Length: 119
Image (tube, rainbow, N blue to C red; front, top):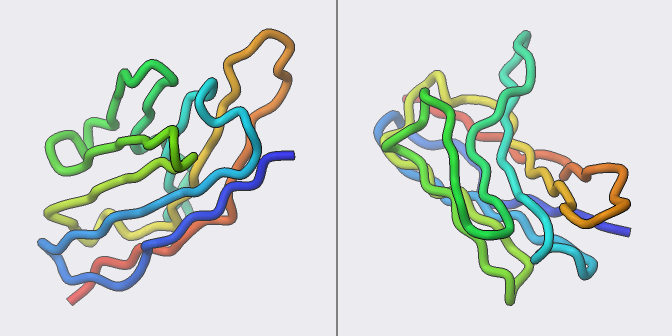
């Protein structure tokens, strides 16, 4: 069973920075794609950034140049460094683990961490 625990959210002023972390239990982290998603009130959950098991990354246009996703397979942890934060970045941020081995049938989600950007 996989469990994902996010941390690092909080209240930050516009222009500030936060680093989110997501620690995964279990043994499939290194063979999984990892992603950060967010959901603002009244809006659908959307992809923020993704990193494949091979280290390739992609970002939502809204965060390109401001966010960096990285992973540490030795620590079973994925990070999201967010800089130059804007009020529109306010949302609950969720970590996603998408296993990439034959026969895998589901992905996993963390409980979410709140990010609020406000002065």
